[in-house]
Length: 462
Ligand code: BGP
Image (cartoon, rainbow, N blue to C red; front, side):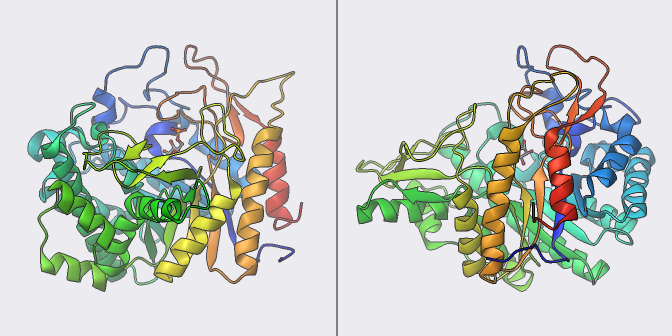
């Protein structure tokens, strides 16, 4: 086991624009899909979020004090191109200030081109990712980013969690809870378009910025078999194919995973495929793979003989005839029922690296929890324990020689969680607001802030 993380290992932290920025109506920002989503009772929307748009300077100073080597954030498509097509100078100006500030502190920016925040107008006009026009729109946006920020930003992420975008209809601008054959076929087509778009943008990045490093960020939830029954191992392997390999095989090899292709054939939901697209993907693999890791799954085989359509949701309980999710008493869970399994991170890193032979960057990992302020302090020992155990797994993989570039915890600062608003916090920095009350939005360093600061300073020796 290595003692310290290598000197060039990048310790970072992440956010995404709509979850942290707020200022949703300001300086010409256009509407994104989520701005038009039905409001959830008792849960804040993204209109103010953590008000990072107005407090960016203060926040980056805190990131500097924390000692971050890297800061991952997304550039809001609708801030920079409100209608998805035309440039808004005020949007560019905000990210110019942010990038300059990071660079002045020696913090490496890692920019996510698209993190769930899709321009609504493009949905209205041609259906967004469901149409091949979605590929051109995304490439045009990426070109704007490369043109304006390519001189200072070396690391790029193409699409955040494509594997999750295509499992939740609203993220694609489709009616909530859509189901049925036509719907599932649309999801597969959108997935395919995103793979083509990724290859085009990787190619463009390498043409415009020869020194850049660019890759996708996927969210593997590696499955372990529920028993020693070999059928459960096969179910776990098939789960992994349908969870993330099906996307990475296209990104890295320009090939469909055979299990995924059979899955689509059995259900008559194959996308329309062009040979030249697959050639483009094969010729433009990513430079690295971003891994968002929170939880694993335990699966058993499914005896069902019928072939069913999948339906909605990231956590699909059962794929008839393939797998079903199972309980695992050895694995504890968060307050939101997410399995806590640090070893799952090693499983993902080994599996992805062995299969694709590419370097990896952990682009998200963290614990969503209720934090309590006691006498002006937040004693988030549970978060420290979670992060520490996951960092230990990374050390283990590094010691075996797996190429891991860095680790970005989710999240740098408290932000609005996709489904739970401000109740479910992830940050090293507390933001004084709740779902119901905006309060003063002041920043407060949690115990985990000081802990991570020490980890970075000591290169993980604490
Ligand atoms: C990932 C997303 C992030 C973030 C995180 C935590 O899937 O990329 O945007 O939201 O999950 O999820 P949640 O906020 O639902 O707890």
